[in-house]
Image (spheres, rainbow, N blue to C red):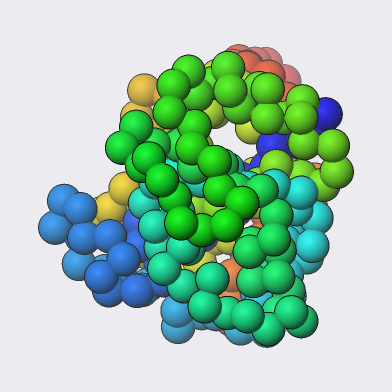
Length: 207
C-alpha cells in the first residue's frame, strides 16, 4: 500500500494560498499571491525534486490540477525531474464538475472521496501517492486520518490573511518530526508523521 503524502508551502502564520503568482488564487480578496517566489532557491528546488522522485501517482484538488495542467504538459524535456513524472504518472483529480480531463493519465474522483482515496492507496503499488498544495482536499483527508506524512516548507514571511492549511475546528492531532532542514534563503523544511490524537496535561508546580 502506498504512503499518502502532502507537500505544501506555508507562511509563518500558516497561509498556503497562492504561493506561486499574483493571479493564482485571489479568493476572498487575497492580494499577496506569489509570496514564496522571493525565497525560492536551489536548496528548495533540490528538496522538491527529491519529493517528486519518490512519486508513484498524484492526488490533486481541482484548483491545483487546473494550475498544473495549464503549465506542465507544455514542459516536454524528458530530463525535467518534475515534468517527466507529472506528465507520465497517474493523476487523480477530485472534482464534481470536471468531466473530460485533457491531461494524459488523468482520472476524476467525483464521489466518496475518503473511500476512493483509501482504494487509491491500496492500488498504488510503487512510490508515494502525493498531494501537492490542494488545501481543501488536504483538510478533508486529514479529518479522516488518511494522510501519512506532511512536508511543510515554512517560509520566513508573515501574511496576516489567506487560506490556512490547518483550519479552526480541526481534529487535534500529534505529529512526530522525522526530518528537518533549512535552505539558504531561510525556508524551514519539516517532515511530520501523524501519531494519533493530541494529548494534554499540566505542569506539576511541585516539580
